[in-house]
Length: 352
Ligand code: TXA
Ligand code: MG
Image (cartoon, rainbow, N blue to C red; front, side, top):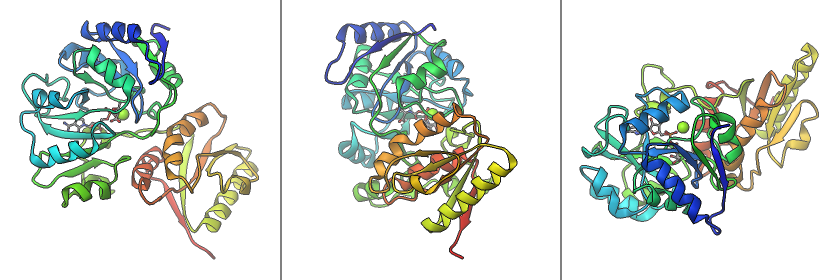
């Protein structure tokens, strides 16, 4: 283990450790830190070598750009060449928070950070530890999610240690994150703003502020010729080791189908995992059953999704069946991640 691990909480900041982490970042090192969405793997966004180190530590292709994190509104104009009125409006409403905006890149941001693109992704997180660290580092921290490329994003420091403990200099352990799904990404380089990645801030919440907004076609269409615009959205992601299948439909029919699949697996002598909810967990007699949260509280489902996917990697299961979670507000974000984790394997069942 190479990384130094420092524990702290938002209301009990260890200022000395934050200062040290800031120095590591200024000198070109890597520090993982909590944000309100998921843990980030930070490097100095204005240092091309730090960005290259981030790609190497994650095993991430260097054409997949990084998000630049700021901790003051005023810093935006230093890294964006142009800020459309609509972007200003959205920032006023949802920053600091789980929103990333794609804007034309200013020349100070190296191409290494933006994966060679002429646009830059910017986010102002609300997490206090993240904000203090960004300030201590000089104001601009490039941070993808702090997981090995392809694995579920980390929602607690243990996940970061598991993936990157040997690769980076420091990990700030701020406990479990609040949201558990990565930020909503909105692209302002087109005439009409486009959502490139759904998140906690839903399409409707953005429409309320901006009026016309589109969903990236690459997210809606499963035609492999239509590529998502955010380079990272085209990669296989979040996949657990076991084969994951989503089962959707009327609740009773879903439970019956999953129980049939579980019984067939047991007959074959294999172990199955089941992703259920607090309301349904008792209805599955076979397999390793994990509740992801409550259908009465959709945020709890988003909060636990990546954690449950990682937990199954530590269980001896060959196949996982999951209920679908098309919940009203963040269902789009949850299902976007779950479908990727399942390689888009989804079975529809109906009442017979
Ligand atoms: O919540 C979050 O956004 C977390 C925390 C740490 O802030 N970060 C995060 O970063 O999820 P990452 O690198 O795992 O995902 C960033 C996504 C990728 O899909 C990437 O392709 C896309 O944003 N992206 C970054 N810059 C872009 C750009 N200029 N144009 C289009 N897509 C971009
Ligand atoms: Mg990521």
